[in-house]
Length: 75
Image (cartoon, rainbow, N blue to C red; front, side):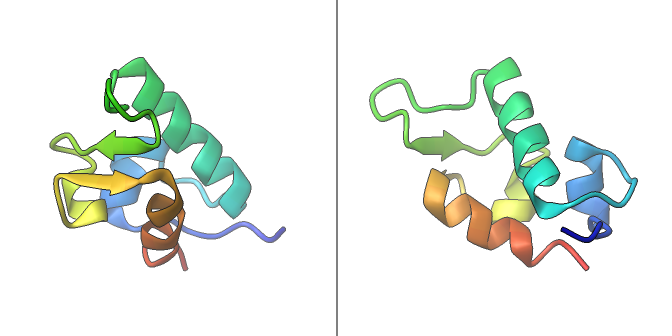
């Protein structure tokens, strides 16, 4: 997969270097798990913190919706 450049908001979470979409999602999951952002009752839901809110546009998204929203922040 070709490397894609993350937006400013996404770069704050995964880093500014261009990387394949798969690597971006992997780094996002590392961030989510390190900060305990998975919903305790439903692990498929991700709670947005101050860094993820500009990417998601809302307080909580499903893990499937997350990959769709992240695509809009890659060029």
